Image 1 (cartoon, rainbow, N blue to C red):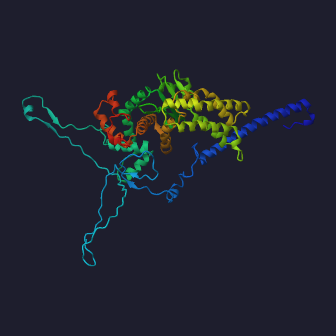
Image 2 (tube, rainbow, N blue to C red):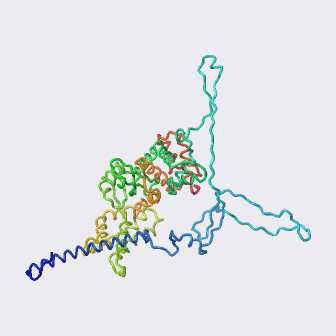
Length: 522
């Protein structure tokens, strides 16, 4: 309804103008917020997702073949490396020392001169190497066990004995799945992110009608029969460590009781700190992100937990809670990414604060090879003054920052996390960021893009258990396929409910065979 301004008093006009000014201010804030969100979404879609500086020799996924095929980088040579280099050599060849070698001789049958018949004299030889690929080969092993008895004992009414050569039981009861086949399927899905439906196509192409349903059933049976017990032991050992990283990510599970198929479920991940002797990653599936899950997962734990600042961990009692400077830095990176085009970024508070955080990371990088005690001393001497200055600057900026902007969010996060972000100054073992947990959860996120969702809660729990074993194996320098082949070949012969026995087969065990390691132990 239009208002006749001429009929209004001066006080009414002033009141109307003030109300409109407030409305304009609110709408301006909303417009700025939406503009920032659009810029950030554009960066996520079309820009680099990494916070690192893009280097000139980094390539895009979409033009990989074109750029990789250029003669800029010379082809590496095939050489048998029999010693260790102290420094990395950019011209280093491919290590073929572990591969079998077949020699093919190309020699003249008639070693007489075709012109005059005089015997030829050898003056040299040419040699080149090829790396040959052999497609996977499958075979059926039929196990036949002969059973014997004694007719004489039977005639004399003595209980007839049964004699037979021992034969291994199958890893899955009444199944033709072998440890090698199961390990191949596990390695493809959980290490190489190849979904079961794509593996089904691969098997079909070589004439094996092996359905994804059968493979899924095998994995669930392995979880129920073995992996549930094994990963429970891994979780127990994890809680004996003094330093843990924690993180969580979403997963869609279609058939969760009393929950819509579109509702987000969560995969929680816990990883031992860099100072721990036993390096472990444990995944836990839960249908929500509630703090009660963190409390359950870390029950009885009273050491250091490093997170991204998620409030669920703040409700845990008796822990030392360390924050993540990478998440803090990310907030200021988003401020700069959402700035209007043409803005002088170097003159902004965000750029100044981001530069101070980057200096903290640079100090860590420069001293990563020092002892934990030396790192603590360096942090007290070099990092602490920067952090003191950083938080003074943050608090000054917060006094004048406009509400509901990316900058105000970044400043608020920094202030709220100050106590947790300072914890690493007091302990050289603690890392400056929670990137170890993010790195552990990344393979799951890559796989999730391929298989998209889990069908049932049991399937999600199975995936959590196998990812725990796969990522722990990789963390300990093991070859995934070889480790699972060794583990599955042994489980039927050992008491895997006995923790002392089970310890010998864990990925961190010192008693594993040499051939399961990526690099041979010295």
